[in-house]
Length: 356
Figure 1 (cartoon, rainbow, N blue to C red):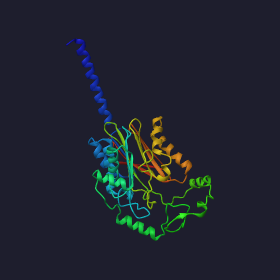
Figure 2: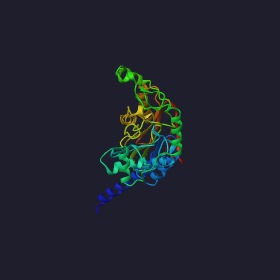
Figure 3: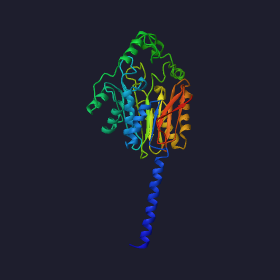
Figure 4: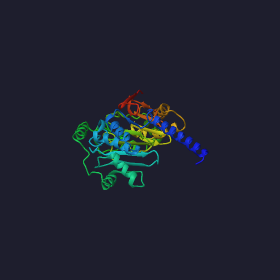
């Protein structure tokens, strides 16, 4: 073996050892693994952290974390047993996105199946589709091995629905219908049905639309983003939607780019709030694309929220943003927002508060 070859081999070994050392340093620098979730859903973040800390992929970790929130029925707005619709039934919306492959699996208005995020993963794994909806989503999920059919209502959700019925189904998500102050059946108001209201007038009214019961406890989602030990990124959501929603309503929870978005080359985003308004703007897609163009997470989050507030000043919502290096921030409008984080530099989950 020549002296030159030995010298080159020694130099290569030194460089390789140095690279390994830098990699180890990066893993303990507080960058990743990283778990971020909307709201103080600490147990969900802890479940996700245990998974990713033990080597689970970003996709599997999101499933683990969101599943924990479904089982805990976080705030009564995630998983079974909460947020009844006008008929008193609870349905599930969920979405999972792989930021490496850009694959998405989602279910919407799913009946009879408790495991929303697991059903979304099954759509990603075993179909070439992105979203399945309604009872057919339930049939698919059960056929792929999830438990069901199951009644998703609870004593609490049915009591809430009964009290709402006693209050003449007020407030609700109907507009321009008659009768306006009862449980229906509903019909279009005469003026609207006869075409006396122009499109421009209807659109202008929509900008100041009153949505009196949109808040954390009745219209919320867990949105979670994860960077695993390999630097791979995934995001996901799970929700039982808006309380007393019109049956068949699909919110922003299962919509990629609205409730969550992930791109391993850039970062990820999660959103929560008035999904019917927010989904019109795809705020999480906007956040990730802003970071792609060089914006820091805080500015990207504020920019996405301000775009919505400029059109709908009375809307309520928030986003968190995290870039591929693990830097994170949040922005909100209409409420005080909190999001939860765990990274290697923390002894436990930390909750960050964002003021409107």
